[in-house]
Image 1: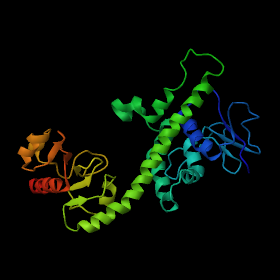
Image 2 (image 1 turned 90 degrees about the vertical axis):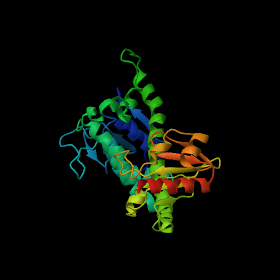
Image 3 (image 1 turned 30 degrees about the vertical axis):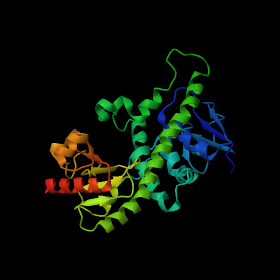
Image 4 (image 1 turned 120 degrees about the vertical axis):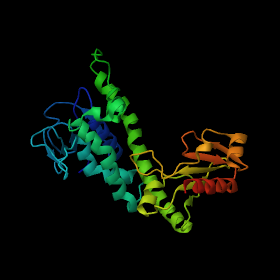
Length: 306
């Protein structure tokens, strides 16, 4: 069936139908996006794809609402929002439209679903309290997208729809960035696993460029690795720590405490390495002007950690 109309509700908007629209307008660029509560329009029919309105979920009929009872649930028992339903049915096609390789499709789809879509589902359904984000509650993505609504006293007939359409490319930028990041991690993983094999028992992993590495290190079970080195744009080299996990900034080993916050000659003197340029005060990254210098700093960091 050719989709000619993308239909969601009018009035104020939330992140779920806005993000659903990101996916659907990419897949059906020639379809007309309509915001309405007209029952005739929100009833399934030829050419229609209806979401976040209509009080029904029937993928074959092209309607994806979640406000009815019983409401659609994930296999985990968590509730879907319209975004979760649209992602479940159309997310893979959206990833293909963004040129994600078929070999990585399921991994990227699942990661985006769990780390990006599910939180929107939970917040939209009130299944998680925004306060769980603590002082960051007001800058979660759903909250930020809702700040793009018109002011409460803007009563012009097109205020909500104009704001929705203006918010659409902003929301799209966030979705595409999340996809790019996860797809990039998939590409990096193969490179990191190869580098781990080449490193053997060394506690320092050398990469050909800066890239995401922690998940591959964990996947390989390379618990012996403490530090990573790689060249940077401009010709210098970086030495970085490896975090113990995704939920912490604690490293497997810090850089030597005596280097903290030092630059230039002061760092050269403290480390004894000619070419040492910078060490962050947080002891998670240092920079040197050559591979030889960064290897020397890495050796010192390993010795200090032992």
